[in-house]
Image (cartoon, rainbow, N blue to C red; front, side, top):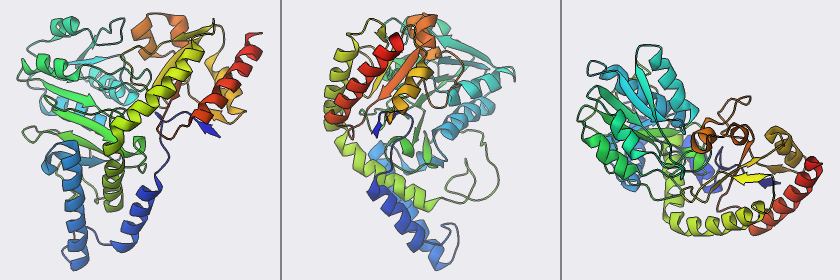
Amino acid sequence: MIYLDYSATTPVNRQVLDTFNKVCLDYPGNSNSLHSLGVKSKELEDYATSEIAKMLGVKSSEIIYTSGASESNNLAIKGICLKYQNRGKHIITTFLEHSSIIGPMNYLSNMGFEVDFVKIKDDGLVDLDHLKSLMRSDTILVSICMVDSEIGLKQPIREIADIVSEYPKCYFHVDCTQAYGKIPVDLTGVDLASMSAHKIYGMKGIGLLIKKENINIEPLIHGGKSTTVYRSGTPALPLIVSLMKALKLIIPKVSDNYQYVSKLNKKICDKLGCYDRVHINSTENSIPNTINFSLKGIKPETFVHALDEKEIYISTKSACSSSNSMSNSVYALTKDKELSNGSLRISLSYMTTFEEVDKFLEVFDECYKKLEM
């Protein structure tokens, strides 16, 4: 098996799983209970939250645990807009965003909010001049991902934050789900940030939203004491501690892993660039973990299934996107419907070996020649 779909989800690190299992067995108490088992769980919860906060460069009070990035994105967007709608109902985002960003935007649009989309330049970066032209006195939220899930484009977050900061009634949300564990993350000027454990070799079912403490949001889930007033529910202590473990394992290795994956990326792109029907959509502003390309004249689903038969796994678009529509991200970048309808994504990891890449390229060549006929 050759797994090349790490942007969709990552395998759980054995040490993370062991941590999860140990906490499940050794800490049965609800951390909000007053008895000694509850106190013991609360102490571990506070320790884990403190460690996570240090690694992310935020305060413990600014962390809201969620079920994952989709919930975090929904909480950030709906929470801000519903809380501050008296200030205005104008939101700005891009077509590069994950469906858990676009979905809430559509929901709010049906409630009377106005959503504008920033243009993407040929190099894949947000058009900062266009963003400036879209900003208004009634703009209350700008939501732009640090790295998108389909093309891997890394956006100039600091420059965007500087623009948003000129509007004191507007907040800046950044989806960092595809950034953490792959590149250094700087949250200077960012008001809210989302992430998920299963993208960094952690457990599925746990993520968080960073919310700067001077900001209020409307909760999505009400009722019951938890780790924060902004998200009710029994604290998922084993998942919280396993998230701490996943971050401790991956954060120190970000630089070394980036250099290694860059070499894998170059080997694949150099080879794919030799095929007439292949168009590489990723740009120099894409992180090396993601290679997005299009096959002209070959249905992407057909190619994915052909590789699947050889136990090689890549994807079409994001795993959370509709399977029967073109890639909005690729279209925002290329303005080409053919490329947008035929895009494929290879996503790499420090776990990917050069032997796996060689085998993938060999099988790719076989499938390409067969389907080209």
